[in-house]
Length: 355
Image (tube, rainbow, N blue to C red):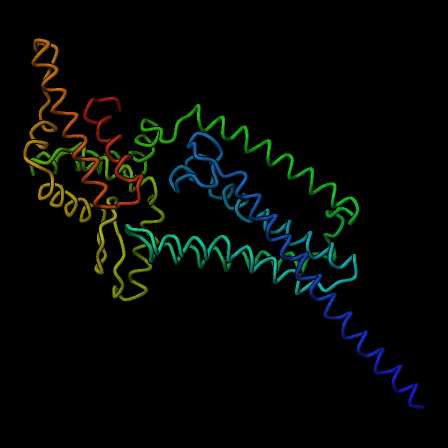
């Protein structure tokens, strides 16, 4: 009798140990799926705006592909990886839900949560709205994962058998590495910030009427148009019209009690600012902070062809110093290390009429 009870206890202990082992293995496979998903997006991320960019600006994404196309790129991999996790775990006799939960949670942590943390710690504006965007992204990721869980019995034919799945994973890794290599080459060839392309996209986004209104307002305030327009270009590149509308909706939803950034120049305010309101604030900021010498050079539209060599070099040197001041001033506005460079680059191109 005692031997029988001992055997039962041993069987129970073994059963409990096997369950814990299976749960841990399920979680491990889920974590592996989350790592693969993050690795996929990391591999296809490129710097060049002319290449297919997961990390391209919001304006460039919408301009390059339809919003539906971008949504598919953003969420289809989540569905297929979640589906693969569910089907594979079930086929090897493990627990589906722990695997799916660990995969989804890991991906949200290394993507949305990490993005929020970096944006919150970084200097600059727009952190509050970025949190809202990442919260929506996380919720959509969870919804897609649940869709994969509900559909995995009927969609299991899309996932290879476990033995073949390992080969498929290594093939995918190889393809991703090759894609990254070509993307790097494309990035070096195309450059990091195509001024002409971005300016044309911004003009289309804000409208020709608003673009010309900005020029007139700058002229009335004796502020260099190229500086204000450069700020508009860089900000709208990250905050196209639909995002600016979403910012205003969020502000109204929070009863305008949270400081957010608004308009085509992304000025901080608790009160909702229109695009023109934000431009007026930016014009005053430039007027107060840009030196009189820089203003004079950047407001001057001198035809240097009629100057002698010495006068021409002196004038161009003054313009270069003024542009350097613009770059440094923009850096104080958003000292993320790249913002000032972009504003300076666009301002110089607009001043010289390259765009």
